[in-house]
Every structure is written in C-alpha cells, then in structure tokens.
Length: 106
Image (cartoon, rainbow, N blue to C red; front, side, top):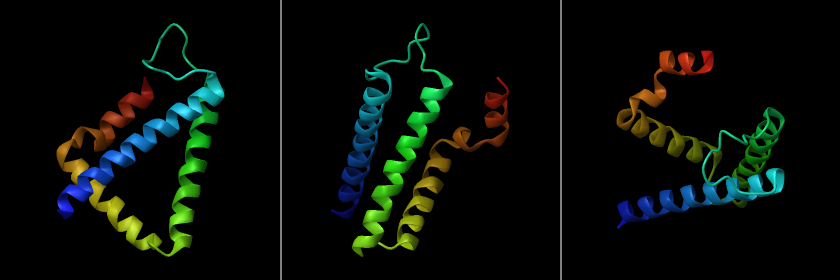
C-alpha cells in the first residue's frame, strides 16, 4: 500500500510540475509550449524569467509545507536524496558530468 502511495505521489508531483510549467509558459509567452518549436524558440530572457518564476513557486510551496509542520526541511532533503540516488541508478547518463560538460559546450 505505501509503495502505491509513493507512486501516486510521484505521479501527482510530475503532473503538478507540468501544470505549473504550462501556467508559467502561458503567462510569459502567451501560450503553452506543446512541443519545442525550433522556428519560434523562447528568448534567453523569457527562459530566464520562466526559470526564476518556477523556482520561486517551488520554493514557496516547500516553505509552506515546512511552516505547516507536516514535514521538516531535513525530511524533504532525505526524500530528495533517495529520489536522486534512485534516478542515478536508473539513468546514470543524467548524472554523468562529462556529458553535462559536453552539452554546455554545445
């Protein structure tokens, strides 16, 4: 049962991220990016603004959860660490620093 709760929570978290990203895209760009379109990419300024807005909203959500007393910051960090470790085992290429450096160089 708890395993299913974790799976459902992760799905809800991903759906929430996607929905928030869409709301931010709508606010900044005037539309939601359905598929990245090389013909009309967002400007660097728009991307920076969207990243900042996304971070601010996530930070606010984390702060509200911590302030509610339902979850302490240390507990959240522990969960994030376990998720990151699981992802690294499932998709090590996402954590390979040499590939990251190559992508940044392009």
